[in-house]
Image (cartoon, rainbow, N blue to C red; front, side):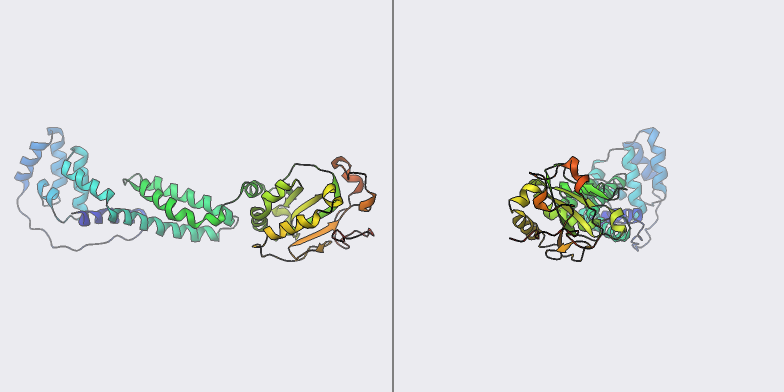
Length: 347
């Protein structure tokens, strides 16, 4: 019985998803004069107010109500009649059939297959849309899943449990690589702002004039880097910022800029710091060049951008509110800005 009845659910579901229905051929039923039998059965189990409506539904089936309930095969139209009948009267046999369908493995398989089919179509479309980065894919897939559930809940039972079960156990895990850290997510919220950079640390230690640059070509690269080193940078107490889309559109490749604190440089801790960043970025593959800087390893670059030598800076370094007195913009050329002094990594 369940095998035949689930055909109705399959066809209805496929219709809702805009797919062709499955057509089952069957021999035409033998037409007998069953009107009197139907009248007797219907009048026995239904109130007078409902009898005429039930009889009208049964007229097109050439079957009695009892035959419909006990039939081993139902056409789609006959199945619809039974569902309409159930709305008038609580038929325990019909409810049993329906309950068995909605918890059956075959029904679950139908729902899961259609969910995966529609999800695959959605994902293909999503990946072609401009302005959607791969790091937005998890939330898009989740939103699609809940939207599909809301749509199907209007006509089917148990779809929420079935689809959410599939999403949590299998689908969600397929997108786990795209899940962002808090730092990366904070940046992503401002990546298309009209500003040139997004500051990701508000700490303001005294400055040394030395800066590091992490190479990137777009905002997705920045997110890749932040997932790898964002927490390390934050915990290191350095000031750092990340380029927005506006900056990348102008041709700059300065994905992340890190201001080295004076204490780090004076205590010669910069080598350990940059090597830790390099180690964290092992799985980051983008490389290139950045004007006005010196390459450390083609992913990391550095420059000096003060107008006085490091050893002539104020004791303890340059304070934030005094930066304008010393700062020279990086417009290319010499990475030392023509300041004659030792390199950042000279011992």
